[in-house]
Image (cartoon, rainbow, N blue to C red):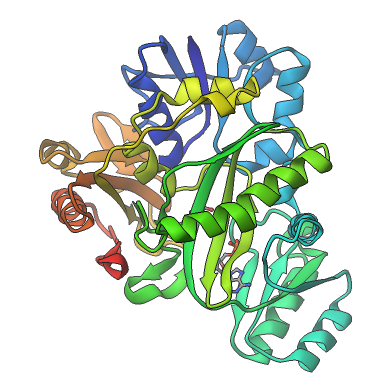
Amino acid sequence: MNILVIGSGGREHALAWKFSKSPHVSKIYCYPGNDGILGADILSIELKNGESLVDIAMSHKIDLTVVGPEHYLCDGIVDQFREKKLTIFGPDKNAAQLEGSKWFAKEFMNRYNIPTAKAQVFTNESDAIEYVEKNGVPVVIKADGLAAGKGVTVAMSPQQAIDAIQHCFEGAFGDAGYEVVVEEYLEGEEASILAFVDHHTIKPLASSQDHKRLNDNDKGPNTGGMGAYSPAPIIDKKMWQRIDELILQPFLKGCQTDKLDYRGIIYAGIMLTEAGPKVLEFNVRFGDPETQAVLYRMKSDLAQAMLMTIDNRLADYEFEWEDQSAVCVVLVSGGYPGNYEKGHQIFGIEDAEKVGVKVFHAGTKRDNEHLSNSGGRVLGVTAKGDSLDEAVNHAYNGVKKISWTGMYYRSDIARKAL
Ligand code: AMP
Ligand code: GLY
């Protein structure tokens, strides 16, 4: 079968790489991809003038399309593909609002008693500020719509909260910010729960944890994700039971009752609070960099699992995992998540792969024969080990082989779990 992966980051590289391991897969295309992803196994695909992704999927006889970034899903790519009888993995436009609108998600959670932070939505600046002044800090301010991961402020002072509210209403996030969700601050450890879901069944993938902050010890600004590991030891058997009971099964029931056409992956960012697991947000797509760590441990055939999900036969699919742990350390350009320099030659990727790590490309570009950095998050150095400790050491052995001017990474990925 032929597969199309949409997106250009490390997550998409990991998806394409995983598909390349399947005996059922003949060709893998990636749109738009990046120079580091594309190669002998993973082919580039271009949109000519006026062509749509639907046209491309038809002309390249694509049997399965998988979408990385949420904006395609929120814009209705699944609806467009299905209208042409094309097979695509993901929620339709209506169901994708679970990520596209924080308030849509919050109302869904409240309707189905899924534990989450208490929240209020505001369409006007002064009401939001008045509410914050009355209720105090810490508090979390969220632009309602998609804001490329930049729409959330955890405010520790009233001024920070007010600034964040004003920022939204001044149009910093366009239409996404004219509705603002003001949310109770939750304390605890975060984990990422990814689960496949169809009309009858929900089945989790292996657990994982991301590292959102830029610097060691969870300091510095929020980023897209600086590293991940799987499994997350904090999610033991008992915690899995609670997550299934409190979050996954009510999620499925909610989709069924609300008649959401959800045949894809749901990613719940959860906070393990003293009062139990609570959902911080839903994403309607794979996490980045969780996917790199999770898929690196997956024994199952991903394409087959997706096709069965799309066919509403997920109940008959059993995921299989390697016992080993996996760790992904993300290497970023100096200055990220702010402005960063691009175009520096990257050295040592082959040497890293010689020590047995897998390097997933997120922001690389080929000029002449050289690879250089072309994005904020550049590479995801991913490794396995019999223990988490071993996986961490293995990953950092790979990291040490790689360099470019300004390269930066966290040196404590997974340390909290050790
Ligand atoms: P989100 O995009 O909603 O996941 O938010 C990004 C990050 O902000 C999360 O990964 C958390 O670290 C933090 N966050 C979001 N909501 C809350 C909350 N209610 N309490 C504490 N931290 C939060
Ligand atoms: N790892 C965070 C995200 O994918 O949103």
